Length: 224
Image (cartoon, rainbow, N blue to C red; front, side, top):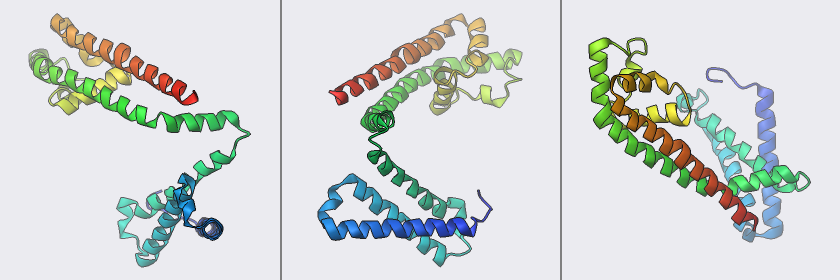
């Protein structure tokens, strides 16, 4: 944790493991030559070892660690966790675990595009909320103080596209407090239900279900 020193015994074990990783990589290079660098697992080992060496250099050059605010050394140390992915490659006996790891790597690109699609859909609704609903929210707040208990978080929830995006993610995607802003606005201005209901139906029953269908389809293609 920040502000606490790592016990010496753990540093010794960490450096010992780094030495073992380095020795193993050198033996692989001696036996197989540089052609083994085409294997992703070997490249992962190289990345882990380089991060470990940089960590040692930074720790030795800057013992007081003025970069602690950026957590540079700790971030480099966490890179060694990546080597656990090689362990999954050897666990053929744990069929389910190996299948899960394989499927996650297979659908990573699909999930990235799915996130972008979801963000684009939320942005379209956010622009409508900023242009149409934000003036109504401010008018309702000025007239009756409906959102006094909620505070500034509700009052500024539609002042920009990114604020409205955050509101949609919180209320529609995460399902947290949907009615806190929507219900008072719908009761005061029934027409605003078109945007609130439309965004919920589009994102929940449209985009999110579509993402699930595409991910499952990706799994099927990978299995075939």
